[in-house]
Image (cartoon, rainbow, N blue to C red):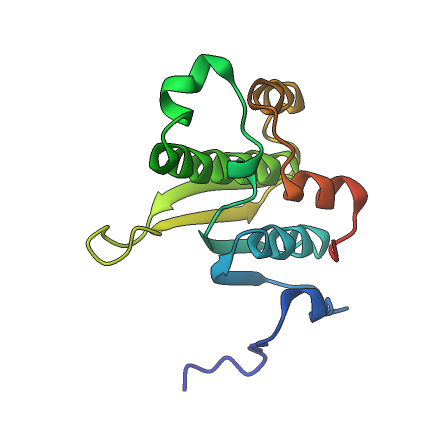
Length: 160
């Protein structure tokens, strides 16, 4: 109806998705749970997608990893650690996308009365690295974390 003759949608498991030889203009994910968001972001970066819109969900990976005695008043309470972990996860994702050359924003896209999972990571391909690897490394070391997206982008493997 809108005249997009070459628009294509694919539904399925992220690990089964094969990258197009023709290039990808836009990658969208909505509530891809836990590290499924990382798998999608890594594939989008590998494909040099022109734009990425991702709404993460259920960020559990870093909850199990974060350790920092200076943050004990925050981290000793499960609900606070869970919320903090989700923010740290999305901050790492944004920084890693910026390192991969994307202009990245993290935005609230729907009112919290509808869903607590209301962050949108919007990334548009730019000309080069935008975020310092040193700053991210210090952040990761401070919290003793090793995000899956970092491993996927370093290894170039989008199936782990």
